[in-house]
Amino acid sequence: MMTKTGWNFDNSYANLPKLFFSSILPTPVRSPKLVILNNELAESLGLDIQAMQSKDSVEVFAGNQIPDGASPLAQAYAGHQFGHFNMLGDGRAVLLGEHILPNGERVDIQLKGPGRTPYSRGGDGRAALGPMLREYIISEAMHALRIPTTRSLAVVTTGEPVFRETKLPGAILTRIAASHLRVGTFQYTANWGTVEDIQVLADYTIKRHYPEVKGDENRYLSLLQEVAKRQAELIAKWQLVGFIHGVMNTDNMTISGETIDYGPCAFMDAYDPATVFSSIDRQGRYAYGNQPVIAGWNLARFAESLLPLLHEEEEEAVKLAQEIISNFSALYQSNWLAGMRAKLGIFNEESQDEALFDGLLSMMKKYNADYTNTFRELTFDKLEDSVLFGTSEFKEWQMLWKERLGRQEESKASSHQLMRNSNPAIIPRNHRVEEALEAAEKRGDYSVMKRLLNALANPFAHSVEQEEYAALPKSSIPYRTFCGT
Image (cartoon, rainbow, N blue to C red; front, side):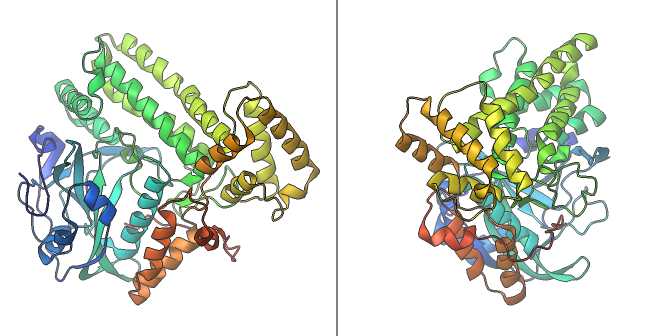
């Protein structure tokens, strides 16, 4: 039912068996205040921007009012957290329902931080302002970088404190997603449900995300294959911009192929595959260089949950799944190689390309070169500011690269344009994100964040205004992130 604000809810997930969720209302808050609204996203969702800023809409964003047609629930799921299997679920999130866009597309509308649910496991179900603003900044930056992601519609403060190590201002984020179906949703069903429940979930997933495989002879095997393809594309995109998720648990891998949950994530400055930012990842399980391997591991857990549907004979089911999982590395590598070719202005394929790319990355690590700025400087042939560019090793590599470009039909101008479109001028630099969060949290000043968001909105513009955001941090202190729960 369309409301005057533009909400148009239709709740297919709420029609699944009760195993998959618990119906629950958000816990009201004292005095909500809208601190940021994503006008561009609201408009694309068919929502009335002016109405979104009204008192009634702020009450919706805070969980104090439920919009007409919504059916609030908390989703059940499980997950391997740093390799250990746990029962989880939405412990501090409530799915208001599914909104139907003017073009017929369906998206989830979720509140993050609206109070306790049956899956809170002793937590308060609330969220602090800093982590919610952080997700807003990073998810919108990822969208601008053309990386599939959940998005952020609004953040409201609650007027109530949350208590972590210190007292912090409370907030609620409104998150938009293609869905919140996760590998962990299937793991939960396989562990606590029946084969029929797994089939119901798989059929629901196919209908919602992969309708093209519905008529396939083995649609569940096709589902596994399609999820593997999307994850290979997604992780390659992460690697190509130096993004480190930080907590690639199976409950944080979506079936739709979107990036989800921006707790301890960050972007790499100096290139190093061992880079870890998360304070809880002490063993480097989710380091930058491990992300493709972990994605394959997570997909194997997804495949395990689907085994009863793949074939009636378990041995044959395992064989079918293994064929797809074993090919994931090649799928990922193909996507990554294509992306690296674009970053270096290369249009066609040659067998020596991987060695060319590895040679550059090896030098970048050796000379502590900034990942984003190195490619940006190669794009514009401005090679004065880096130790790397002054070495004989680089000059030898550069000669090989120029020879490689000379062996393709496309012009130098075409290569330059390809590089411009593939190498961002800026990323959400960690020190810039912290600067914005500190201004908002400590001084109630959101102008720093909004200015940063404006700069990040078109990362391939390479405008003069973006120059200051490309600068590296002055401090050499190792950066650390926290989950923000």
